Structure formats: structure tokens, C-alpha cells
Length: 157
Image (cartoon, rainbow, N blue to C red; front, side, top):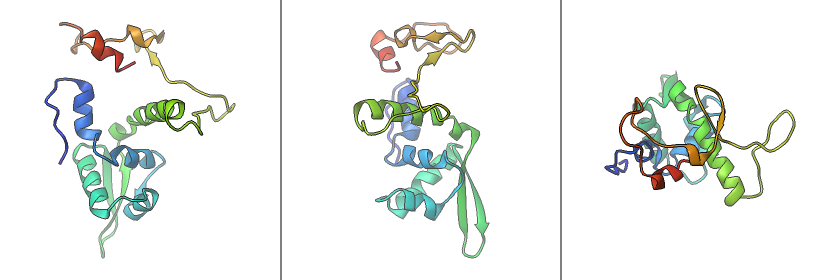
């Protein structure tokens, strides 16, 4: 059962969809392409089949994955990230970036062409300018209303 935080905040609302154990690891593996159930299970040591099934069903409900059957008898499915699910690549990348700098320092995110380390950051959707995290605020859609408290905005930078 997904957790409900009861907060009108995009971080809390996203965690209601993605915050269960294993969900983002399933996304990580599906970012590499379509996978069969048994392939996902083999790539996630320790996950019980019923948990993987529950996560995939929830992800399908939220239109993050698409399920297609490749065998009718017995029924066997494969899973592919939808466009919405592929959008989580930047989230997984941000976690990989943070984790490689603060938790698991044996790896780095690198540019495949030159091998140099890459960094994630904010860019203005309108002008393309790189924006410092301290200049980013959460605001109601349409730009009206009060900005979120500064303490909340620091968590998104």
C-alpha cells in the first residue's frame, strides 16, 4: 500500500507514487530497455516475486510502464517505460550523482564521449540559462500566489 503524506507538495506527491522500496530500482533497470519479469527479478537480488509484481502493477496504474504479453500459455509479460516513465531518468540520474558523491564513492557519472565527470543542474526552460539552486523556488502553477517557504526550496537544489 503506497504511503500517503497528506501534503500539497510535489516532492510528497511524487513519493506517494515512487517512494516504495524497489520502485526506483525497477525504473533504473527499465531505463536500459524493455525487460521481462524474470529479467527484472534476476537484476534485483532480494526482491520477492509478489513485491516485484505489486510494484509493476502500481507503475502501470500510474502510466509509468506499459505491459505487453509475449506468451499466452502460460501468460508472460514484458515491461517498457512509457514516456512518462522515461522522464524519471533525470531523477535516477540525480540520485546516482548524489550517491556517487556522498554515499557510494567508487563510481562517477561521466560523459561517455570524453570520460569526464558530469554534473546535474537547473536550466531555465525559457532562456536556457544555468540557474543556481538557491535561485529556484516552488510556486503554484501559473506563477501566482505565494512562493513555497525557503526551507522547502533548499531541498530541491
